Image 1 (spheres, rainbow, N blue to C red):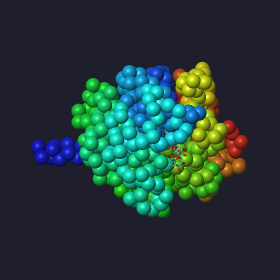
Image 2: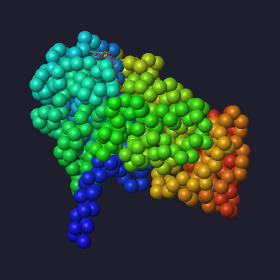
Image 3: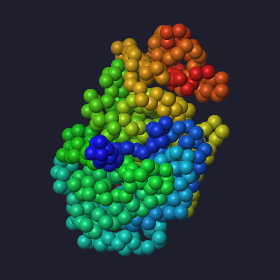
Length: 493
Ligand code: QV4
Ligand code: CA
């Protein structure tokens, strides 16, 4: 018995990095791209917790180079591991993590330790207004030229040595094989764990050797029990490895170390909901599509790179700019049991370098929150779109069930149940969907959470009457504002 317990404990530790460490009634992460820490703390309390979000991925937290015109991507050029950025300082960061954890919303930090800042002729200063680094000299860590790989360009992504030991767009490439470098990285990650974060998105993981990452991950402290984590909990790790096939480095080299950003999911869901691949094929959505196993894949319709054509992904990626199709793709993502889901929350942009909403001094601006839940001030807040946050609630309601009673019209109308907990239908045809369905739900009247909100016994959108035996007539007009309808046990009136 003791041996068995020991084995179970060892297995839990070995697999801990795949566990997002969320409250057990919640399961979706939102990336609040470029938000300030104070605003995220408010958002956790006022919106994310009440709507059932499980966590937030935050923008990089450590000091970065300041680039002329303040593009968003300056934050991917670290100067040190001091917790000071345009989003806030260490005190504000710590306060945010505490307040979010208190209401059951976990914080995941985007950490960059493949590289430090590039020699950058555009850089105009630093957060601490020190000199722009022209050499491999980062005194605030400190790192010096000893700690980096010799400079070379990555021009052949089929050569793993080059991808891992040369400079990604000129960014000074740290040598994680060196003991001192590992120590500095682990110090940084441990600091964040002490402050109560639940895990990390590891930037540019593909550009580091799996064996080095393995050492680094294993050394990180257990999560902070004073923030509500169980003793011996391991930080969740999701590694940014873009593997769309056909390159020298595969996601499978990293998938035993931690979860992976599954970019194929993003490409395929975009293709389907743009109408470039029939929805009927989604019937076997999941591993059979070449995706990683469910518990190892972090999935998203778009991310901060591919929504603006950085890092590849092709023309199929859907973003907030194709709103009707985007909401449908997101609804499918959240209705389906496959994988760990992340919602993108963007700022509006016209061109790919454009920075987040900011004043003339470059200070970030807060989102303006309207009474209908939406937001403005240059922020898009996809996570505040009813069709999206209500699907976060749907996913929470149907957790633990599979897909059943799949139906399709042989093309672009599909519907399915999640156990006896929820039902969803999609219409991407240019003709109406009007049909009797098995909804798998008990008889009653339900509020469609896409077209409206349930408020007590009222529904501000369409209602669906489910008869004895679970049958209901479902109507989604081709010209309707949204091409999806979703009902679940929690939306019963
Ligand atoms: C320029 C030239 C280079 C030259 C260099 C010399 O283009 O050829 O070598 O100057 O100094 C910015 C500029 C880029 C500039 C570079 C260095 O856009 O033109 O190089 O700075 O000054 C983000 C942006 C990048 C940005 C970078 C650093 O996307 O445009 O570069 O931040 O500020 C691959 C990787 C994958 C990566 C993806 C974008 O495998 O890991 O490309 N994704 C992650 C992040 C991403 C981030 C980085 C990695 C780097 O998600 O947001 O890049 O941390 O697929
Ligand atoms: Ca590297």
